[in-house]
Image 1 (spheres, rainbow, N blue to C red):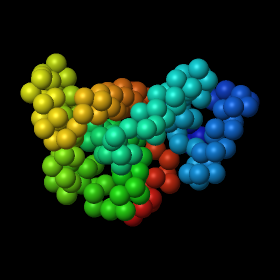
Image 2 (cartoon, rainbow, N blue to C red):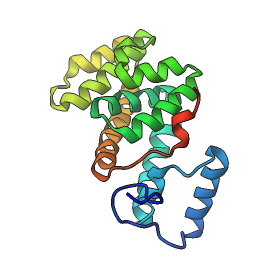
Image 3 (cartoon, rainbow, N blue to C red):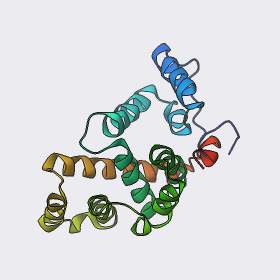
Image 4 (cartoon, one colour):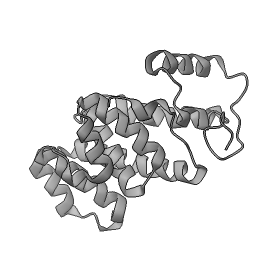
Length: 189
């Protein structure tokens, strides 16, 4: 893979980027110190990039009873099951940063079951992992466990949506050999 390509595929970014896309990338550079490679990977097709970014921003950043940290925890637990290198590095860094706890980030990457998290968060991750490993086996009893832990039906929808999104993105990242930005490795250590 060429050093300037975020994936193993020969899909160069649109050049020049549309003004709105360039502005979005500039904001990423300013706030994050980089443009995440996942965005660069989608930038060969601006409609695909916009669809991806829109869904990501809605699921991960919009209002939800799930905290942003909890949504990142789901991303990491799902990505751990799927062994998605890109997402484990990028979202593991996000967990470390948001939680202020490097050990939590590492535990979730390796095995969420050893992480020091609340019983409610454990139920959330158990559900996300079951959805990842055997979605057809999710039953009412699984949703009831979440309700009993304090989640609403809307929360269950959000948990399922975040888990589903990362199952999709994990597969795209693995199929394309998407590589995380080097900066993620050292963040919040």
